[in-house]
Length: 311
Ligand code: UDP
Image (cartoon, rainbow, N blue to C red; front, side, top):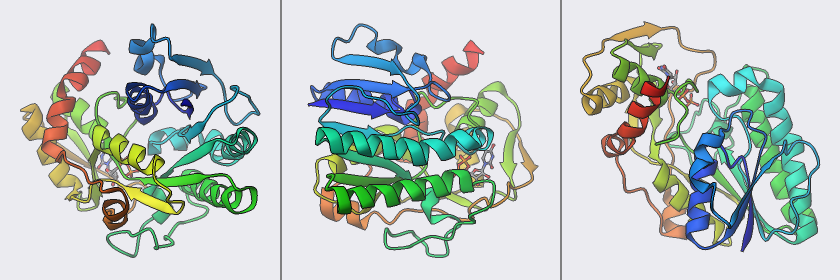
């Protein structure tokens, strides 16, 4: 198969490119390098089945005939999408419409990378796909939340009205090697701070929760979904929930660091709790994650050590 991955120079997109190449497909990666990095693709330099296209997918573009489109382009960490607010809105709206048009014109299948942010600060816990969410439409995070909600609406509209064969994955907090150490995410910040012997910055009182999925589990779930016939949104994430204080503890243990904690203000609209209900993915795809947080952090340790040293 000939596959287009938008956002393929990003953390998750680059792991997806690797997995698709490993399955024998050829891959075109389109990325404007706003938050993606060529370093994530450096190992593919001599791969004949891989082509990199420096392209803003919010502008109309044509990569040639493809059989499958994985639309992953978007800033994805809160620090990145707050800094690139307009670009985030553009890639979720114009970028998604451009990619859906390509899928329609080439008769390609389409998979949208959506997000647990669609649930906002959720009033239902854990979050099932049937929950419509609790999103502040004008808050600072709305540029990401609402553009992904628009992208989901666009995907379903192309499915219903243009007969595009679509899928939607709702991705929960994912981590692993290639996470950019300055993207402001909790795992990148804590790993970097612990390895430097700096204080770990806990926002609020650290009682808010997240559920962290190791990247190889996430990619396996996405690939399984891509091969299924399920068109409705599907949660792919790890259902084991941690408070941010517990996450800090896990990072300190795995790094062997004696860093202390420093408490800082909680960002506006920071979700109180987040945990996927993965019943649907288990039932439909026979998928569930296999790597727990401490194991995943250990698997990421060498990468973070090297990234901290390189700076
Ligand atoms: N967080 C924190 N310290 C940091 C970075 C993040 O306490 O240095 C918290 C943040 O307030 C949120 C959680 O960790 O409650 C996850 O934040 P992240 O930016 O990784 O992603 P989010 O799940 O909010 O999109």
